[in-house]
Length: 282
Ligand SMILES: C[S@@+](CC[C@H](N)C(=O)[O-])C[C@H]1O[C@@H](n2cnc3c(N)ncnc32)[C@H](O)[C@@H]1O
Image (cartoon, rainbow, N blue to C red; front, side, top):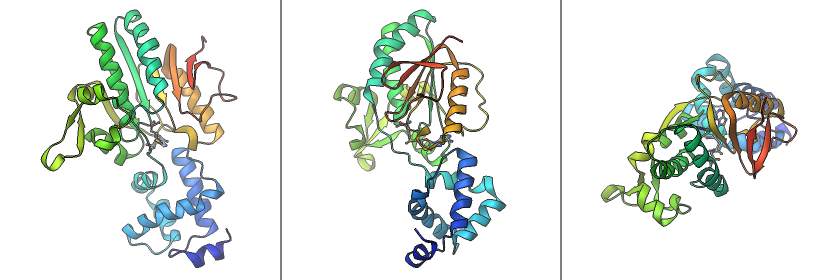
């Protein structure tokens, strides 16, 4: 869209130079590649932020980012990225985990299991992992099992840590699990469901930008990084997949989103199921 037509239709001036700066800033800081067609979306999402900050143009907002890049980064990322998620999203991944992977891990490793939900958004993914893991642990007996759940967005992580969801968010959780793993709110919490404390015990929530250094020392048996790299450019994806391979146990698994693939991106993995990869022997 021509800059002049754009300006005429919008309350805040948003020039080509502003958009170019924002694209470069977001790509460098969090790997999200905003195509030319995202201009309207960027305007819509950030106009609210400009209003909240009392700014009158995108040029002023870009200036703020130049001056205090780290202070504004969280709000910018939360505004730009989408946190859409669901319990048991791509259910076949959790069937594979329950039927194939966990029985093997629990038998072979003396019950040590480490899973990473990388880009956990508002928590539905790690709590789904925790339900499947808790059920496997009941069958196999005590074990040293933990889930790390990380996200770049502090708002999403806050919601994840609260672990309280509207009842209609539980539509994809079967009735047995709903009864077992959620506590129904009453009184002022009516219509809400709180995750069972047993699920919380299994998860550590931490802020983490996947493009920066990772503090974890040990390896993981499985990494779920689903519907996150979809926004990243190819070199960023290639680097990230190489780092995932290095952070996985020798036969560790990587689970990607339904529209994501390692094809042409990495030869460190082989496909073992729909969007399920196993680390190849080095
Ligand atoms: C669409 S959600 C996916 C949630 C969940 N994995 C799923 O598949 O349902 C994408 C998440 O990736 C996070 N994200 C985007 N860029 C990131 C980065 N550079 N580092 C860490 N998390 C990031 C976003 O904050 C968002 O919560």
